[in-house]
Amino acid sequence: MPKIQVFVTNEMYSKILSRVERKLEEGATERDANKSSEASKLIELGLRVQELQESRKESGFNQMEFNKEILRQLSITNASAQKILAISSNNEEIKGMSKFEFSLMMQEIKKYTDDMVGHFFAIEEGEE
Image 1 (cartoon, rainbow, N blue to C red):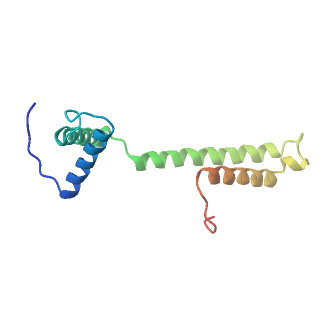
Image 2 (tube, rainbow, N blue to C red):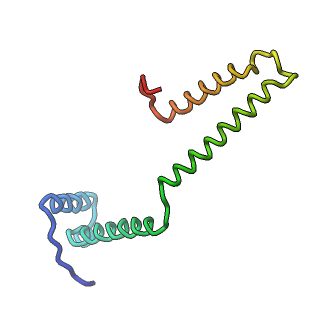
Image 3 (cartoon, helix red, strand yellow):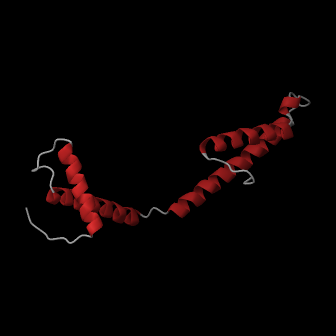
């Protein structure tokens, strides 16, 4: 194996030593757990992370564009559903039934939505 010399901060050195000591305490041999092997693993991991980040940049994925398209699609779905609901609530077969009144249905939908969002994201008072 090729050998390289690397200088690290005292803090990094201490962290590497504590990782080695922990592995030795867990039963690893000195051949398996030493400063050199631990530093090599960390360098390899760092290279993998760096390569992954670089490949993501080259992939052309744009989080802002993705968010914009999701919002656009949700807006279309929301507007369409409201129009269909309004049209349906004027149907002669259900007209006059309070549970199918448009404003009441919208309130129920808003409450359901708020409950679902609240389940996944804490809503602070005054945020609405």
